[in-house]
Image 1: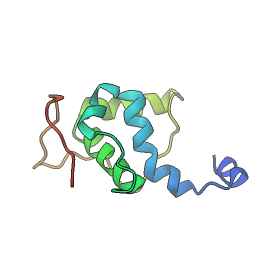
Image 2: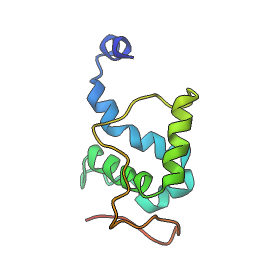
Image 3: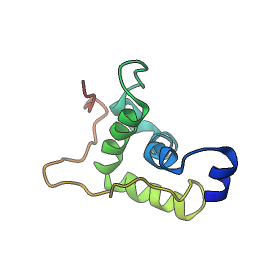
Image 4: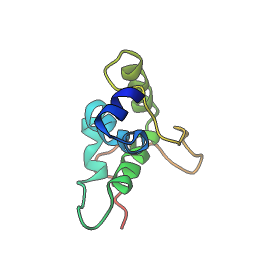
Length: 103
């Protein structure tokens, strides 16, 4: 993959830091309403990706599904510099009426 990034002039960290957007949309499409739409001009793409990561991290089943999709070659085996750990103060998001919109 490194060679492909170099060939196309794409920074690997950019891909890694925003991969959660694709992961959520491909593995947990039903969870996308919890994140909302990208607010161009009001937030950066990395901020939006961080919101996607929050949703993924809050749902252990979704996290496992993403890991399995990576292992099966359905998603790129790439991740940013964060671990998927559900912090003890975070409750899993199950109801689409809940929202994590920040700002």
